[in-house]
Length: 295
Image (cartoon, rainbow, N blue to C red; front, side, top):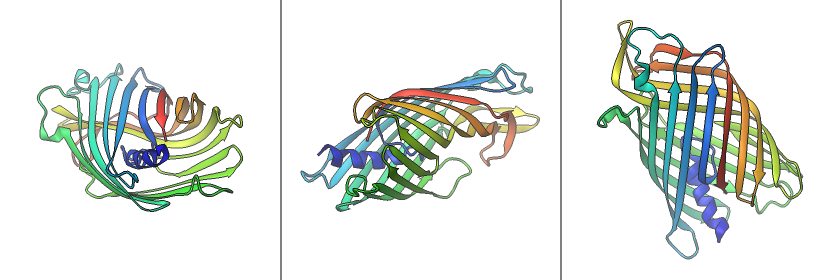
């Protein structure tokens, strides 16, 4: 029974920020010390997802989810006139969503998800630009438990959000494979990895990966810089690195990742996605650690 509840939760979680997460609950901290700069970014994240079965066979399940991210930005480098660094020193992302999952064949599941989130510096009362609405549809073919030689899993989907400047859904394709004893790989966006378990009990694992991380927040008090209006702050970072995982149980683990960026763009923008001011663009180190309960 646990397996049939965890699979739908994993499916809903797959579309949390398009991150290929399989988390039921997570607490983590991320730190970026920018290279060639005195600036830094730190982020606290907490996630919880609750499955609600609608039948005894567990073929129809609702999933309710909540996530909070607090991003602290410490800008010590010189900035142009009009850039109020205090206004963007703390960013909030508060998400709530609900999903429905239907198992229509033994190894096939279909799901939908809709939600809303606040992405803002919350300098005052919430305004319409603070809100972002999301919707996703997806299907999964899960053969992780039923393919004795090389277990695998496919996930296909579409993910839409009302983030300014993005008026179209983004596709998601994810492929997972166990290709050798104690070896697995995942191909997809935003994360592709190869994992090696260090022992047959699968208590410890190392992984090499390429991944994407980002954040976005509306600036309630727009900034005028060189005659142009900055309406939001965002960062997109593509990175490659190594990770270590220790499993306390089959589903509960501690993890730590150390990476270096391949591409980094930290900027102020307007709602048409035009860059107003680039804060940092040099490639840099990136660290993340936490505890999670996962499928």
